[in-house]
Length: 362
Ligand code: ATP
Ligand code: MG
Image 1 (tube, helix red, strand yellow):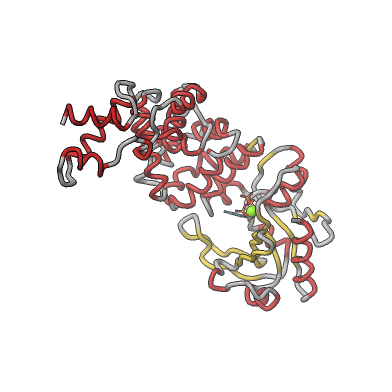
Image 2 (cartoon, helix red, strand yellow):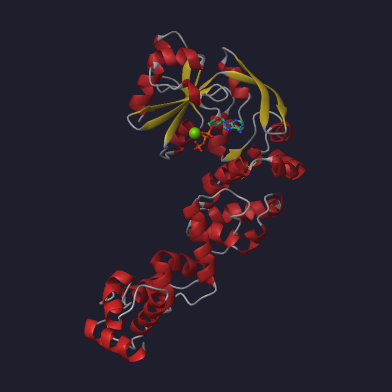
């Protein structure tokens, strides 16, 4: 990964522009954590970058930032810039491209996110980010109150970094969160969810939730059930308990999953019919929320006589022929009945046994 990053920096440098790795990659590299993508800050503008790397699609250019994929590594390349006057506490009204790294670092959120690395892997640390990284502290670049007011997402980013890295928040960030937390209401649910996902998916999610509660952000974020979360084993279990599919963005399959998990929370996750209808995954997540041992649920699931309709030793054609009837609603009823009888061990899943039963009962 580093070798490819070096090549990218070299290519930009060889065209006469400055370029450094910045942000998450450098921070995590110094902490010995693996990164998924690499942020680069450069004096080259998106247009100039396109001349260097043909695969850059300028259509994706947003606020002077372009994405480059090389060998499956995602590079987010952003032109040095100054952000001029913020509107609605979230977006800069205007950006101005500049030629100076120091000024670019000034507009960033936290000192630990301002450490840079050049093409020789030398660390460039203009704002003492390394010291704060070593001390395990999240500090804003400049005045905390001003930074959080400019973009209230930084409130959640501060909590995310504190949670995931196990770092403390500086006193002035804590004060600024209390002062500005109401601004979270103006932020898009999409941006909020991205940060919340990162908090809830982390192994320290519990501490993250405690931190959100300590600042009473549950109210600002409309997460009424945040206090109910005991189990943070999976991201989906957290979102299921929060049950905010009407407010936050989820895709259809996530919505369906969350709805099913909530339904089975009220049912017996070891009951054969519940296991059969909702499957192992949904019941395991619901079971985990209720503190039922996953092994027990897996065992009960594996012991089911049938796991789907396909495993039934009878087909709808056979049923229709047996009853000399055309297809109709009655089939659903019969299926439900024989599934139940088989699941609860009243009927064997054998073709002749099922046929006899149907002839007798229908
Ligand atoms: P990760 O990629 O691990 O989630 P990151 O720190 O790299 O963390 P990104 O969202 O990739 O976060 O942003 C890259 C860099 O851009 C950050 O390190 C920070 O310097 C700057 N940055 C990102 N978002 C903001 C923001 N809302 N306000 C100020 N600076 C920001
Ligand atoms: Mg990043």
